[in-house]
Length: 217
Ligand code: SAM
Image (cartoon, rainbow, N blue to C red; front, side, top):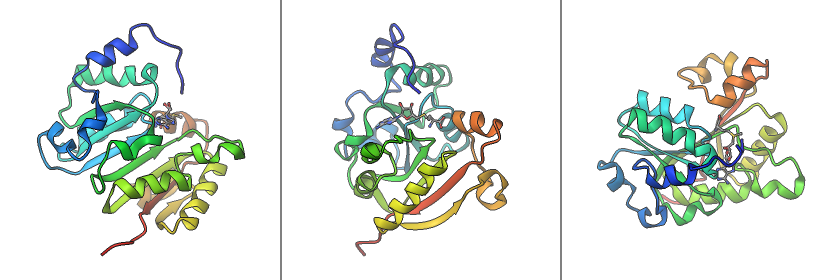
């Protein structure tokens, strides 16, 4: 979802109190930003923020962070948050490839990946947010019982992801190829912008919940 460069988007983001401007400096100290010790949930590739804003509204005792690579996309989320001012939601304009530079081991309790870019060419596989390279990064920042939740309508990406989970020895807790017809996994589901768009076209939504491999006591 790359929008055209929108004039002023960088400036608006630079001035917003809801954006963490120097995320490297917050490493290990994100609870100070939220001024509490509630668990921190992260969405990587949050787009315009529809999913995260609803999560933050429904769960005031959870802190939410959204990472988005492009200012032109993040702008929409920042504008909405400036109107609503949810105290448990901040954004980071950042490339998730470098995520271990901004979070300490165990600092994140859950990661959401929603409708991540598919990067269909084989030579770009390591850029997929569910590749083994990214799973290793998530392993380095998640809490002991931390989870990753991934939704997509892209069957090839989903099957690739199931395979990466197996190859990396992550634990597959639950999965479905048709979330909206799976009563148990769909309970409490919050739709993302892309989920609304693709499911209205009749595409089944796939979802997996995975846990990091247990390497330590
Ligand atoms: N999650 C939203 C949804 O479900 O409606 C948006 C999905 S959109 C297809 C994927 C988003 O991920 C885009 O906004 C893109 O810029 C962002 N993205 C892709 N790779 C990223 C990365 N390495 N770091 C941060 N954001 C990324």
